[in-house]
Image (cartoon, rainbow, N blue to C red; front, top):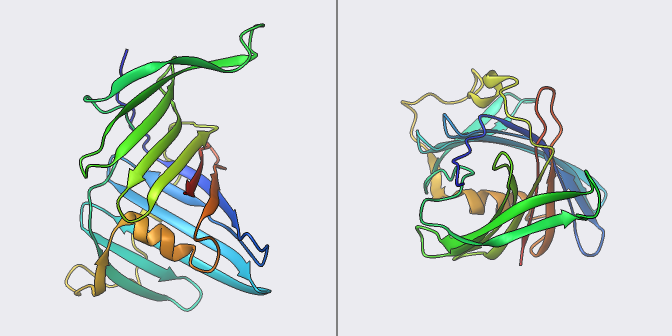
Length: 221
């Protein structure tokens, strides 16, 4: 059975490190599929220097905010591309079922279904969901600028913890203020977050929340 899953809010933590071990980063994040909002907080070190990055993406408004809570500064930029909810698309083809872990004993394995198809932008995807509940496990997505990206999900709990963090802070520019710079898309934002860490390799999002937990790991190949 194919079900659409809308995760109202994902709370998480991303971890990443460079191949030469000079860079390390983690990024708690929040994800609202109903209002099409994502916020990512990145903290890390590069060559023994710490850095932070806080970004709020509002897909319905077509804008993103780069937020600095310490200095009360906020930069408004335009964002392109459609919001992609976590779901099995209606056009997906079922590849088959498998057990993650072992099927030898009760509770030793997880039954999953794997789907494949073509994204609206022409790229391919391979999506794995749990058989019971249709909860996301992993998604391998092909994107034109960044080749293949791998997303893995763990500890999923559906719910909204604090919706206010998915709204721009009061010191951010209002709707009447024009956006700065060139428009970017979601994958460019992720790549720019990691410009001091990885260009290729693993970038992990591990979910830690109060009423829900979600973890996503993804890699650029």
